[in-house]
Image (cartoon, rainbow, N blue to C red):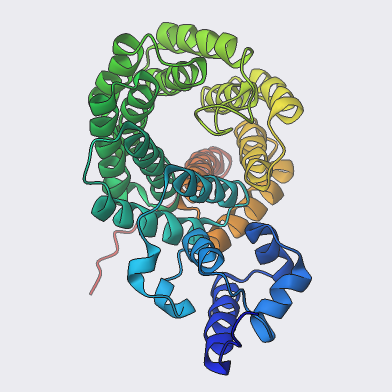
Length: 378
């Protein structure tokens, strides 16, 4: 018969779980789903009977990124982790990003990466591969929550992933690491450096799997368009579309963030910025039909639809979508999406200036010139 746990232990575990829910604004039902338990079990854990198994407490601590001491565990019981435990935490972080729970995902994955740096002291390929997977999701989370001026942390994570991938000779992980370093440099405005990394991903990792290669080509298409290289954009996107048609969007090395739907979304965004509005709207329809249904993708659809509509002159239809996407992205701490919406704002500002200039010219033609005054600020 298990020994009776003191009230202090119940308070420790219960309060830690309650604090986690409160700080992340989630319900008991959401947390229970995250932990793979029934909500009634969570209520017991929070108020009456926390789990007695050290293994279960350790699992909860790892999944939520809560310090083991808050559960009454000695820190030494928290490590080492097995590759299976690491992969469970990584999948949980990917799931959180699909739910756009960015701050939770960041806290958990950064905690895991720091712990793994202390733990991995050998060249065990299984552990190193899991470490590379952790760095991949850490780079992704950091890139989504960072402003462009702060993407250096994401670059560092992907660079470290590149080193591990080379050590274990994994072409798929190497392709992903090079691809996303390139995309981060594109985001910083260093187009030539971005192209160098993206072309290296394409040319030096032919054995990478289809999802990694297709994702890299999609991002090469993106930077080629910025570089005003339309032929490379069209070629890379066509290749990416062909590869996307052959993979399962929910089960691939890019974790659902590359699919036929994501390729169509890239086309829609690109043609909108080129002013080819009908093409953009056609690809928005294809995106809606094929993009995997997640909370994150639903907001992405709002943004690309707003871009196509507003750039096409249908501002009244596009504005509500842009406003709602901005509201949700601010709440969720998703700065990468907010910066994309900033581009819509800049476009509207430019149009306002053009309209104002045209109005002044027409006013002068109708009414004649008026005396100009140079005002001097005191």
